[in-house]
Image (cartoon, rainbow, N blue to C red; front, top):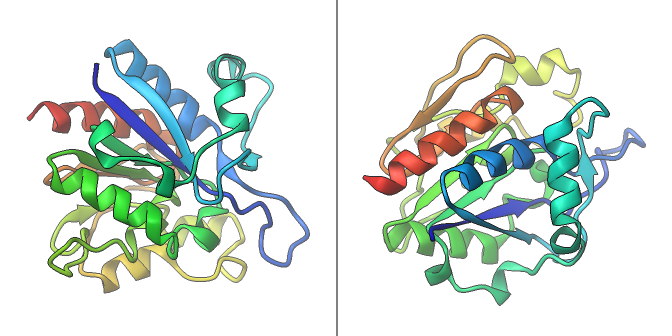
Length: 221
């Protein structure tokens, strides 16, 4: 049974706004349903381990409610990347949520784990703000994973639309382009996901399930 590792932020503060943040739960719940329907096993890791902070839970989202009910124990005690072996996973999926902008770029153990999965033939996937993990993710030859590849993420326009351009520590789209990514995007908040050489990325929450579908296809190639 193939296995995907969902990587989650451990950062729970939205800058200096006084608001909370965390991993965007629907960006895990909806892809998890796609993976499980395709016969994949799922697991979780977070930057700091333990119970990662959550965001984006909506009372009418039955998929998310079911996901939380089924995975409460696992989400209450996530391991860190240093505790895991890349050989156990066929894909790493970096979930979004604004918290990722603060801790994913410098999560070196998590980046090493994802690079190892990719270099042994696995898939690295990320959605929305999850590609913050790709900004400093390099392979053993020193190259950036995103360099020369089609990549998407939450866009500068979307960040402006939600009023957080001056809150997040950097512009994600801009940072990915600076690392050599061939950035691709669609209209604000519409589904858009791309796959390029076992790297799969999606633009926003609406793209999360599509990222899972493309990850499964990339894994089969």
